[in-house]
Length: 118
Image (cartoon, rainbow, N blue to C red; front, side):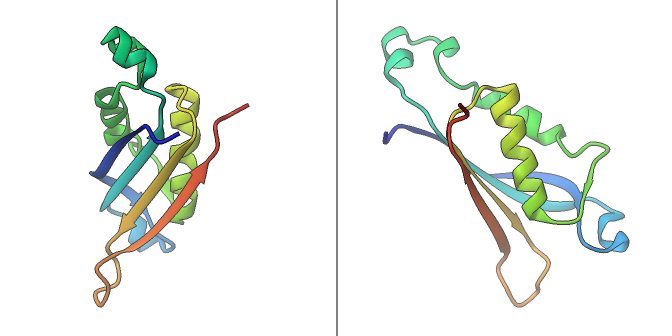
């Protein structure tokens, strides 16, 4: 399938880091999500109910870190993917998390792909 919904570089602020000091304040992260989504039904109906509501997904992700702390961005990416598949019935998806902690690098990122749940 080549149809996809892409949310690129959604700016969020989450508490993530290996040390308590790093997790003490929220830090800027960029999330990129790619949902494998067949557009056939949505294109035929022109109805939001036949596709993923990317506005609702973004709003959920903006608040996803409230009251949460992660040590690793690998864990964060895994938790995001699980939430999206559970709460939004997303099929196969890719999640990328960019973190800005190494001054000599533009960013550090993790990317994971999860298949469509069975």
